[in-house]
Image (cartoon, rainbow, N blue to C red; front, side, top):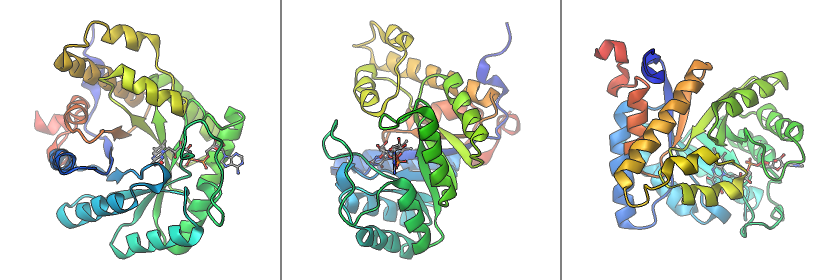
Length: 299
Ligand code: FAD
């Protein structure tokens, strides 16, 4: 038998980490401990989500501003079209630019109640492509957009979804970050289909290390991601063993990353859920070392 799948990674990997704005002081402390733990891995950027319905506008801004003040990291602020006019969104973008924030993750967002059809706010941006176009008029932001290896649930077809992604890139987006997925083949096929559709921007896989299948299942149902049956089987009997669940989660995600690496992927975006441990361990398995030192240099 050969070495483990991830043993070949050569320290040539770029990272980004996603966080959500904390609601309480305790959650804030947890977030900052995570940011400080992950900072030495020198991610390309760290992003901060924007709550459904624009509900975290101030908290997203405050978190991003603190990252600018207290770290050497490059922050990316998520921004959605929901519940705001174009003018209001443009003002938020101007505030970010003035605060030194140069990267926006531009999204349409979801309707306030799950299951409802999406309706554009009167005077608002109609979709993510329109938002990208608007942001580019405000300032020359670096812009990431969302992509869906398993197709967005609102999309008529895979082709229509790819066409929508192309509109976002053509409007000026620099890269796409994907919804989470659990099959390397699914991502690599999507990447190849995107290239065949004339999308030349980088497509960065969004990696969600799963240690709680039930919770992930709820979220996946809303966003059209599939949880494979093997995942259920893998976590069977571990309900009362949180540490074992974490080890399994890291192993599964590291193997997915290793397969993607073998398929040519060199940038991984981690959904951290504000916890550093899993992402840190997976990055370590992939040969990433603090200060950008590669596995070989570290040896
Ligand atoms: P869009 O790209 O605008 O499109 C969504 C769907 O609608 C596509 O299927 C598209 O084909 C269809 N569509 C769009 N415009 C048209 C049109 N004019 N005609 C016909 N069909 C159209 N949500 C948050 O609220 N806050 C966040 O911080 C957040 N961060 C995210 C980060 C990532 C990496 C990802 C993948 C998703 C994130 N989301 C976030 C979720 C996102 O807001 C939802 O998935 C939302 O339903 C779609 O957003 P989008 O930007 O992909 O929309």
